[in-house]
Length: 314
Image (cartoon, rainbow, N blue to C red; front, side, top):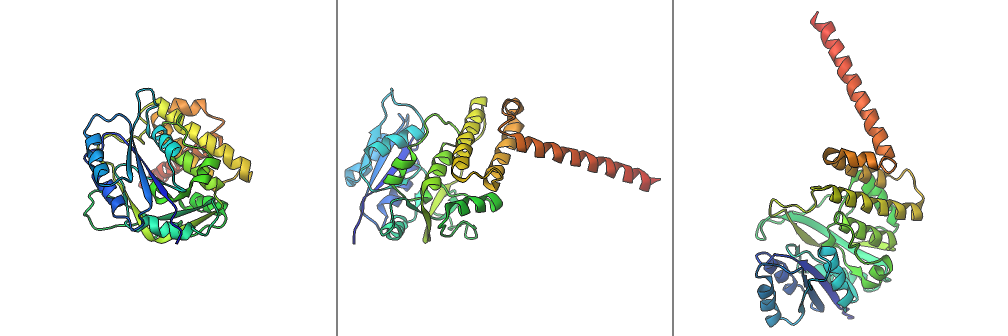
């Protein structure tokens, strides 16, 4: 059986207390032809010593420590990993998440006889502690194959859906074609990257016999929160890129996928930075219109209820 090399790329920053569980899940893989490129963003904990202890026992682990001149951030770290990766397939993995022991083997078997632009996804679940009972999102509607990628976007537009980054296994040629991670984005960089991968892939094959685990937030610091105006603007920019690419390929101005996602972004930003919504009225035109109609209906209901209350209390 042909056993192509899989390059596993792990960006890391101050995860010495957790990365051991992640690396143990790689050692446990039933598929052995892999390399793991760990890119350290100049951590201040004991992460290097931790990783070197794994390197001493397994030559498949490679540690790259970014220089002070390298751009900070996980996207830049992943791009460094991509540039030195020797594998035919790429597995992205965050430094606190977990792969099931058969993850690589099951997806490689599905992709071996497929063209380069076919990708694979799998089941996923959240966890707090590694030894807790397994809980997967078994009823997700996107847990299936997609021969037409627009069908996937339409489904997520109607019913929602999400695959964490480590659920994918991707041929490196597809990444070369789609482009590397956008290092200028500080928000939704993963959403923008995987949108390009999905947009350009020819088929999605779902591996229903394996899974990945996504660790719940382990501290009060959540990088996905809109804490600053710059992050809010970055989130909008990511969706401007996505919208432009989507329209170019599908020419679908009434896309449920885009409308649903933009509506979520609109309310998230409106709550924290309403002035940024005013600066992006054209981009949020439909969301602002729908919000205005909703508020008018809400006020009308309130007035009707108030009048009925007066009538029935006389």
